[in-house]
Amino acid sequence: MVDAVIADDSAVMRETLGKILEDGGITVVARAKDGIEAVELIERHEPDVATIDIQMPGLTGHEVIEQVMAENPIPMLVISSQTTRNADATFDALDAGAVDFLAKPSGDGSVNIWSQQDTIVNRVRAVAAADVAGMETGRVSEEQSQTISVSSEFPCDPTLVIGASTGGPRVVEQVLSELPQRAGLRVLVVQHMADHYTERFAKRLNERTAYDFRQAREGDTVGPGEGVLAKGGSHLRVTNERNGRLTVSHDNGPKRHNVRPAIDVTMETAAETVTGNLTGVILTGMGADGAAGLAAIKDAGGKAIVQDEATSRVYGMPKVAAENVDVDMVLPKDRITEGITNAFRGWSA
Image (cartoon, rainbow, N blue to C red; front, side):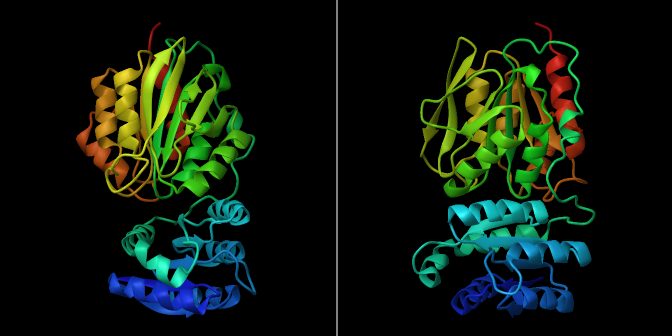
């Protein structure tokens, strides 16, 4: 049984979310109309999970998350509006300790949100299972970003493909911020995330890493020291490799594992196309996406790395990959960049 607290200043949204969760077998133990009440109700009921709106009176969603994580940590899912301002605030909420987020539908939310019923219930259950004990919050420090020293070249046009889902954005940011620029990797990232947020996440990666990052565009090319993030709502395919640059394209075909973009699509097409050295990484997330792609990378002669259970917010995708693929390394999040650099250094030219 999963117990939940809902915090939202909209009475309609509180009522609708409550019905959606209860229809999905989740017990709503309390509903908060503002940030102050949210903190009080979370402390009183000690739920398994809380859904938090960003813009609330009393305390903002960000402030609620900071206070709860400091005093009585529980898994929290941000449900916020799709605005540029709220996109920035949502990522700040992840920095503060929220596990994951969903975008409120535009228009008549009381009607449109029912179209996301299964997604909401599944996401709340996944977030409720997340491990938040001892979780570090805040931005990756500059000192952390300088921990990798490069003493040798990285041969054969190295390509890195990273896949993540629930709990992934902070780990993706940490791993990429520690990558040595001199390695000249070509980086492809697939994070399960809606279109509105992938654009902002790509900007964050560009600002906080040594690599030139952007949201992938149709026909984009990726060269040494560059990275692209899969656009929300579209699979990212690797279609060509020429003169040290990869060409990528969007694929709006059927979802895989009920998601688009799917990690498997990017990893499988990379395995088919990339002629240089190739490494795939699966980070925290629910479901099974990425296992088939990682297997394809191994079959193509590449290396496979997965995040370990102890540091995964949700040990779903890494678990499936570790159980079904002959992975080269199972590592805590703080050592994944080290594993990546060692994997590429281990190849000869």
